[in-house]
Image 1 (cartoon, rainbow, N blue to C red):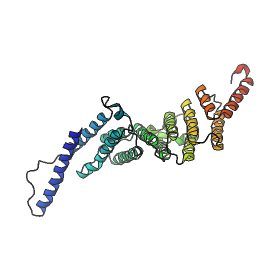
Image 2 (cartoon, helix red, strand yellow; image 1 turned 120 degrees about the vertical axis):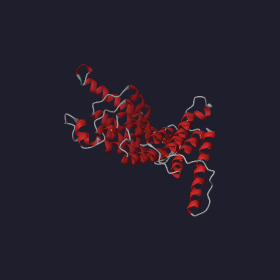
Image 3 (cartoon, rainbow, N blue to C red; image 1 turned 30 degrees about the vertical axis):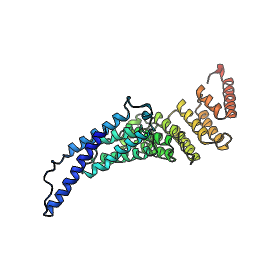
Image 4 (cartoon, rainbow, N blue to C red; image 1 turned 90 degrees about the vertical axis):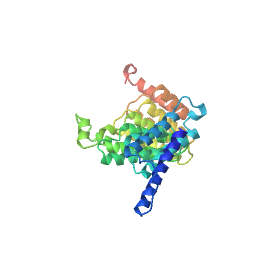
Length: 325
């Protein structure tokens, strides 16, 4: 890998010297005639692509030392930063990264635990959208957005204070482009997908319940002590939007919500109690019986709410013939 880096830098220096020589010739002075012929754009792209592939393969190689395999190892962070810096170096030789290079770079950042992972992931997403605007063959897929969410997941674990806010922004971008919020207005349609498609939305970007669950999970993983209530508010807002678009919350939804409350709000905080009560109220409104693992998580979060919930379930069963809904 080091030899590849050195060779790439040698080629770039040759390119810089060649450009300098061309300027001298235009000014009527003699340039260096001994330099090798310049690489074509395709050759430059292949060279940078090979470098990024090499970094990704090395980063995830099973033969590395255990301490270097972890997402937060400094070596991984340094390699990812080097790979990202290649984007500027490509511009210096007058070539633009194609979508394949950008997606490969995104896959590096989604496995590296750094406060910069989310920001760099969003930068790659922005570059992909630019390419999509003028190249019909390029499509920013749902997998790309999921990779950006994973980048923010690593940034959250590294302590980025605004990870929850940025995750919410990415999720809202997927909602806006896919038209998922419009489903409520046309839910009576016999062809929901067709109705949304007719309005030129990109339905392939529609978030799934798993996408929403992942976003809530990230809200509970932010390790920074700043903006704790904001992280909770984002998680609660995502929960409301899950219900709003017609999804059924899953066990993972509730576990992620309760973990977020437990992580960011003090045990005796009235905000923690009121937020949990609101979650239970919405679940009750959906006539939903919580999974045993969720009930246990509720007990760990707030024992009094846990007791009240069990009492309400008992009352419901007693008032229903044969213990059925």
